Image (cartoon, rainbow, N blue to C red):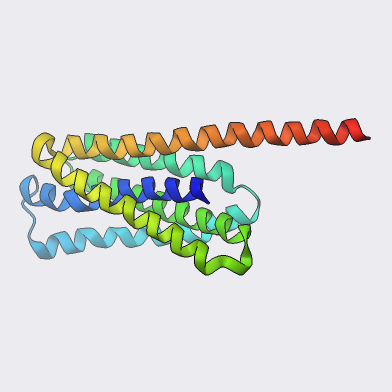
Length: 192
């Protein structure tokens, strides 16, 4: 539960950093109006496509490896956003990739935490979603500060760092999971 809460907080922090500051960049760099920015924001709806796909992947027992993939996707999305800031289409592509990563991570996380204690889903969800919003608030706050001091590249680096921390946590958890599984297999084989 703690691992998934931290991972999703990092993912939502990345998401919030992007979407909080991209509006400033769309005004400053691309001279978009409020209506045009709202239309640009609709690309976020593309992330909804990831939910059923992530659900099927999780149902096949591939939630752990898929989690690593969505964090790599988030890091790539923020790198694309940082490098492609001068091109509205590339910036939009980065937004779509990031939204796919966030939705995929959310579904995979919820699938795993709900399986922990089905009778306590409401309590688990409360802790999980609370953590997610703390991560989002931190991402938004830091992106505002970084945008003022380092511009869009500072925000892109923040998102990449959050995603890389997520990849690090995921990697350590994969190693621990593998070690535990191998140890269990050795115990079972020694009993036979």
